[in-house]
Image: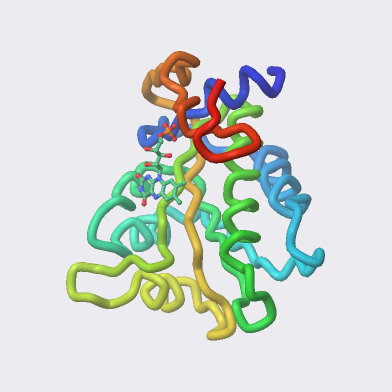
Amino acid sequence: MDFKDLIRTRRSMRKFTDEKVTEPEVKALLRAALMSPSSKSIRNWNFVVVDDKETIKQLAHCKKMGAEFLEGVPLAIVVTANPTENDVWIEDASIASLMIQLQAEELGLGSCWAQIRNRAAEDGTPANTIVHNILGLPDSLEVLSIIGVGHKAAERKPMEDDKLLWNQVHYNKFGNTK
Ligand SMILES: Cc1cc2nc3c(=O)[nH]c(=O)nc-3n(C[C@H](O)[C@H](O)[C@H](O)COP(=O)(O)O)c2cc1C
């Protein structure tokens, strides 16, 4: 798939078959994450690969809503970074998250981002704390996202060119559109 098609067909997938993601596919996803550009090339992300069903189930309940889809994923990649070493850890971890999603699409897999940073469970406990407890993460790390990956079990229409917000693009001065 060329890049133009890849970015068109990548849509968030929240329904998955039971088929496992193979070891070479997992490796390719992590390779993409580890190739992400990062500020000053600090590369201080850590990725936790979760394929244990019970652990994934627990992760799916780490926040009030929006992570339920994880219950059905065969693979979850938890994206973390160290904020004390990196003032732009959010940007770096976001780029790595997207790299995983783009690589998943290229492999014919579906994916979806579950936001963890700034999210909380029903009782107000930060989702970050809950994920720390589930995975035994060190205090130095913050969790940005969990990327659920698997074989698609639903149709999603590709992005349509005529729905793009070209009016939000400006040339030379704000307000100059083409
Ligand atoms: C920063 C960010 C946070 C997101 N958080 C969630 C989330 O917690 N749960 C979820 O189901 N989707 C989440 N998404 C997916 C978006 O809802 C989705 O990308 C958006 O609706 C556009 O749809 P598309 O990805 O199919 O093009 C998130 C996406 C981004 C970029």
